[in-house]
Length: 77
Image (cartoon, rainbow, N blue to C red; front, side, top):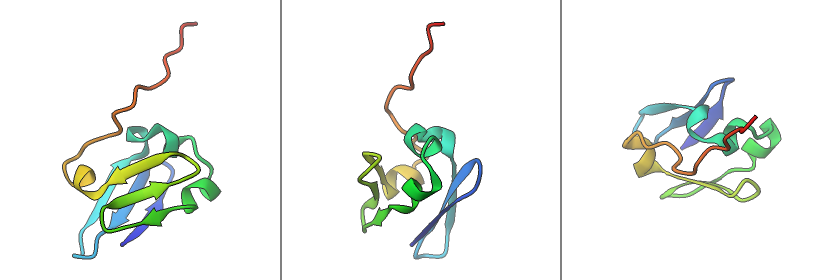
């Protein structure tokens, strides 16, 4: 499995040959992270984990098209 980023998306190359592309907007912690923070990734058979960002993304969730379920910050101004 391989994970890479462009300006708007996260790309996950699965071991079966498929590549999943998901919008970074689905995962605000990754969207606002630095490239160095995004590179601090641990890949397991269950998913993707960024310790410093407190972000966990399951492969099953990506395959199901599920974005992050945390609530985005809302501006009141």
